[in-house]
Image (cartoon, rainbow over all chains, first blue to last red; front, top):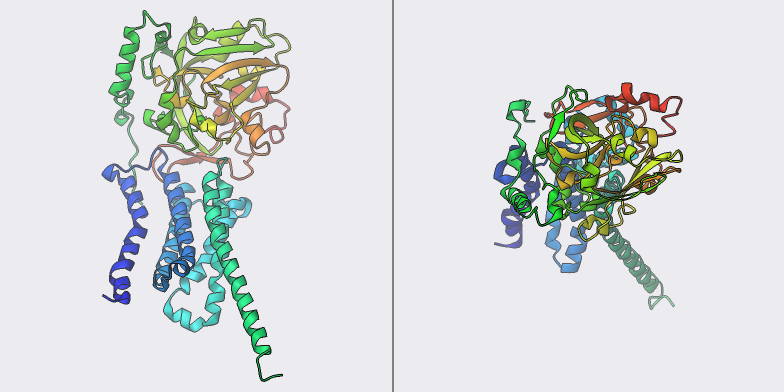
Length: 217
Length: 313
């Protein structure tokens, strides 16, 4: 198998299955299969687990670029879209559990929460911002948008910050867990900042290099 | 979404089933050496208590299952996840327990748990329990009115408040190694709240000795206030002239007030208190409106006459 085949027939199906595993475990918990349990408050458990899985997948999506550079594995990029779409999938599940099971479809409360509760405002904004990214994730859309695609998809940095902030803000007192997410996100964003600075510096040297190119004097 | 059928009371697992062999064994052992060790006079977790049902204090809502009440706990001394206390609290030795009484009272000093319980007749009361996190339970507690105990210490006229302190023992309470709150946990009541007939000193649950995760061996229950006021595993009672500095209020004063009366129209700064979700209720039928003073307004509203409940939240 060449690299393309390995990714298509092996790695991608594996990642697909792995990304569905948290949902499968939650379903087992709901049905009481394999000793899984959602505890005394299944609604909160579903809500929190879907949210946390979404954040984990989002951070994983953002670590693809650093990993491929550091490990020298450009093929890793082939997994990124799937991870991003799964992050979106779990965010939608998280929101659905909140609206249907937690609020019990009380749309008045939903509206009030979004307007009055900053952590929900932030989370909901993140969800809305993810929609255009999911919609434009196809090859065709990527081709159609050209350079603008990349600009649009930089929104993911904003979304990740909103997601971690949403988590941090809803925790009652013990913020250790959201701080771990914030730390990982900070490293991932810092890496990009360093890279873009390096690139800018490189571009500057090459430009000044051409300005003093021999023959012009 | 799957619909979970409403569970008939007859299907609720009796508490006996939850007490594993080891606990029973420990109880038997403790009883066996009781004549030698004074500590063993304190019954083990799950041992049956001698109590009467007080029908005056009940609600016409089905009580939560024993399993729900004992696996879904906020007891940060054992970790901040709801399941943590049920996993880690068993290491807490609740025998040889003593309570110190101090402050503005004529009778002060150290009292063993046996002293505290002496002469108190235990009764079962079924109370609503509303957490500040907007979930609720219905719990059959076993205990006695706090006022019966406090009267014994003969509080002086300067005793305006009562302060309660939880055990501080980071080796047995691993959660205390993390500065989530300013340990030890402190709570307090105004003296008239403390002497109110609804305020209960609790030693049992479902007719049995209280499990550690629910605050054994001695905890407070103030049913018209958010759950965090109902302090667990009490080792100190102090009568004070000034308002006690309570744990959650010290941690986040804008979010948790000293009074913490259940009030659907005073929201927590980050979430609504208008409704609550009843633990154990079926999917899509768990959310219910929160009642003023958790449904005990008839009894306790006079305590707060003329007070701005928005300001004194």
